[in-house]
Length: 169
Image (tube, rainbow, N blue to C red; front, side, top):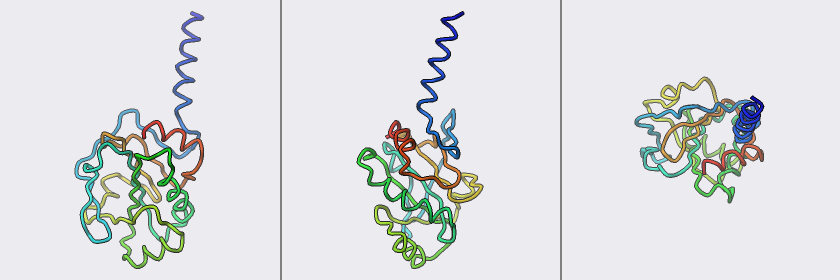
């Protein structure tokens, strides 16, 4: 009996060490698969995440009028160039139906220079991913499946988050 208790304790601690201590991360026990995750670049060209299998992806849904988006965007920009996450690609997808000039002004104002803005397609990924608000970040593993999501803003430079996300890189 004592062996069983110790064994359960060790397993519980091993799993807990992998989880970041950030309250608004939802980690899926079974990764979710989606068909046709397509959005647009600033030239209205279609981007399909299936073309990026083998990479860790963050689909960050945001809008220029969103205050929490303004708070987190600089740390998301820094995350893109973190040398420990060389397999990470960030897609910042504007769902505010805002024009390119307004989005470019936002990127300039917040000094976002390590990734490009993208736009939700007319089929609306917001509906496909059942977003409840923004910002929301969908974390996609190398197999193209959603393994977690961040609901609300976080500091993407937080060392607990970076340490955890490296497990998926």
